[in-house]
Amino acid sequence: MALHQVRPRILGFISEDVSAWLVATLVLLAGSFLTAVLSWAMMNLFGQQLRQRFELQAEERFSRIEERFQEQEQRLDGLRRFFANSESVSNDEFRGYAEALLRRTRALAWAPRVRRDERLAFEQQARAEGSINFTVREADGSGGLRPAAERDEYVPVLYVQSQASYGSPLGMDLLFEPVRRATLDRARQSGRLAVSQPLDLIGVDPAFTRGVLLAAPVTRPGATEPFGYVVAAISMRQLAGDGLPTAGHDNLSMRVIDLSADDREEALFESPTPAGHSELSETRRVRLADRDYRVELRPSRTFLTTNHSSAASLVVLGGLLSLLLSALLYVLVSQRQRALKLVEQRTRELRAREQELRGTHGQLRGVLDAATEVAIIATDLRGVITTFNAGAEQMLGYPSSEVLQSMTLESLHVPRELQARAAQLGARFGKPIPTCHAMLLEGGEQGGQQAREWTLVRRDGSHLTVNMLATPMLDDQGLWVGHLAICIDITERKRVHEALAARDLLLKKLSAHVPGGIYQFKMDFNGRFSVIYASDGIRDIYELEPHVLVQNAEAIFSRIHCLDASRVRSSIRASADTLSPWREEYRLQLPQRGLRWVRGEATPEELPGGGVLWHGYISDISDLKRVEEELRALSVTD
Image (cartoon, rainbow, N blue to C red; front, side, top):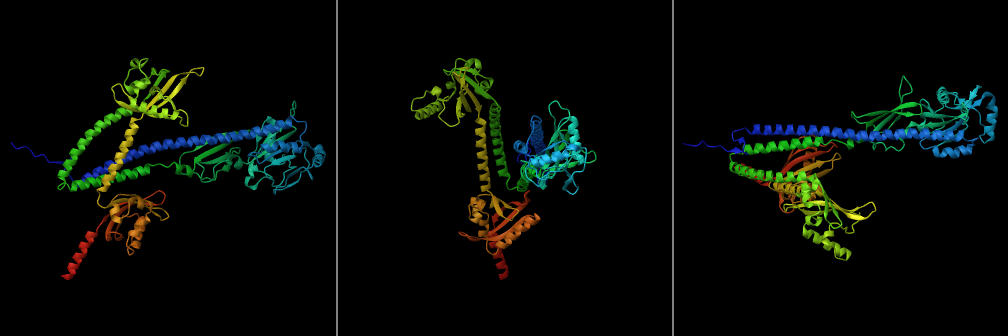
């Protein structure tokens, strides 16, 4: 009875009769789906991290604004108490006290209450104290001051201490203008600090004209009515913007909005850094004296640029890998007739490697589980173990009942490591060091106690590499009562490093068998060329080492024939402008092999920064060109 012939399958599961396009399409779709899932998960994680970073910085900015508002209140209240507790305050005394309070405050002023019948005597006294031509004045509506009209009461500015002088407001009656008068009335009625609606400040730097007045009534002990007011001229631009990063470097775009008017809102401060396009925002009401202000924070373009998502790179990389994998399978399936034996051999090798990987995976899984545990071992002065936690049991395989009061920390170490460490310490200190103290003594390194790498012996005789930090244990009197060793398993970290090195070596070996050379070529937004990656095959094409091309991409054009150099450059720039695939055949003038023909193909990819990145290969077609020339010559002869 004839047995049914078993038809070989490519990679063990792809039939020989299946369409190569179908295989490539399915692989590309699967890779695209996996890339989309990973990108979606990464975008969600990135969004959460971005919101946390923004909220942390916004909370710090809110706290800074609140602290500065409180500082203004405390400083003005201190000036108020200075006047309330003094019999009289001269101009020099006022300046000496107020000068230290001008941090983030444009000006501080003292304005006493003056009745109609006291005005003349008040003006004469002010002139006598040194204020020449002093008179009670009021705003004239054009930005200047004029003598005040007769009224029942005045609150003129008598003393002023400002950061810079842009016209003195001495003598200005604060009761004349409705906004200032309303602020003083609220302060007098409440007996506490009051802040005005936004207004134009007088006598300050024009860049800080728009601001508010913070007023506090000054009352003698036992009195019910204030005999004057201390006033602070505050510019929100200076108060909120002082100390912020320069434009283009601030992570937050901030606005401080006055909420005093019911019909409109006025922005007292807007940071020069523009807000980026993001849904993230934070708003908080902060209080200055008796008014609320709304502080709005949004992430700036700098913040969004600095904390950009790598999802696009993942999509590009995943799409590229999916495309390359589908192309590889297409080639394998399309050449199945000629490569059947090779595929079967590779399949057996892959299955054997799969079994090896499964065994290695089991070992790595065990090491990974143990890596999350920390072994804590305490000893007395003799080195006998007195504490052996559950992490140590799991890591070393000893039950605590078998270790406590019976084993020493020295017995868990590899003897040759202790002997080598003891010899090293002995040479350093000039005296013999017992091996039981080798893992506990410091070798004079800077920084005090430091962790060292040791090899521990498990209960089954196997070895375990750990990072151990040994420190002395002291009692309440500071006496040395023992040692404490904290061990962290670093076996997995070492194995990961070895796996990474093996992967890099594998990539180098695979690229060495690719005909010609593969490369990544980049053109910056300013037209500068650079080579990101070049395989070893590039050495045979250009007779240049790959690292030379990575350091200086212009070395490529030094090998191109002088008649083809401008054409190659133009084709590269045309590919960059249209993002179309680059294909070109050109001549090379090499030092050793002379004139050679090469063919290059690459796929461009636009970079976020404005540049273009090509992924491609280049191969030597000199033999093909020579055959074409011979055929052309034969055709002419015929």
